[in-house]
Image 1 (cartoon, rainbow, N blue to C red):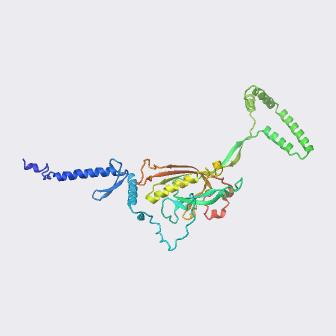
Image 2: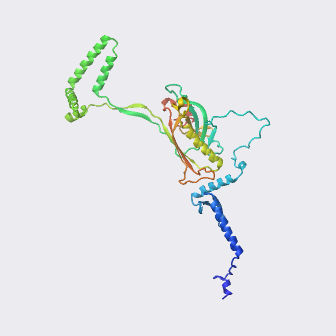
Image 3: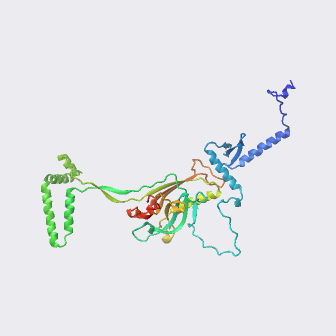
Length: 404
């Protein structure tokens, strides 16, 4: 029996029991592993391989255990892992491939450049890659706001110096809505008569014409009343009843007594143009450190340039200046997009940023959220007029697209 105890149930030789040194080494390895996990930052990503094909498996440390990525989480964990690798590199290695090498300093140092104002910048863009020829994107040029008079004839009169440019990919949902304001208007035959007679009296060129037109208006009123005696009675009856606190109209009395109402001669008349509004939604998923910094600058630039100016300035902050304004353009490479709509100067009226774009709070090692969503709402400063479409030559050549 003692000899048979050396073999397991399958007849294989059992391994010898671990020595005290091996047990101590195992305990030390477990203690080191527990200490390393305790000091490990949350959201750390590790990559392991499984199977004969050595398939890569991405796992995230949540503070207690390793969670294996499945389904759509694989791309998210892969992005986190890439960011960790970039953060572990030396600063000289963590630069964009498209960035040219830094030139050597000249023998004689140049004069220091004039310091740019804090709100001014050259260009910010996401993704932080070189723009390819023919690539579509949306461009936001930020300008200071100015006034040239009480009435603005063209929207370009409101635009002053360029502060900077922000370039973003065209959102998945874009469109435009043009409006014209119309409203109904009524004028019955009595109002028409009164308006015509008043106009003739006011338009009298001398005293004789004034008296003549006044007498003619009075005679016309008498004739109108005689021809509509029943309506006149109903009118005075309504006035008498309303003097006692009621609220009966002439049309209501006419409808109750004879089943008629005054013809309102209703028409739809133009009231004025409307100002267009636009909404854009952008998704940010920075892939490495510099791109995360660029996203932070973009969000801050939009927030800063939609804010009013003047707090604590002249007159102790009693007056505020208009925020900066935006010129928006759909672009195809270096040219305006040949089809999509154009924009007039816009004001950024609302902005919201969701720093948990995937529904869960997860950040890179430097604190940058791995997914963000930015919503922008713009309103044009001036309406669209028929004359704005007069660029016929450009339209025929396809440079204007669908217009405004």
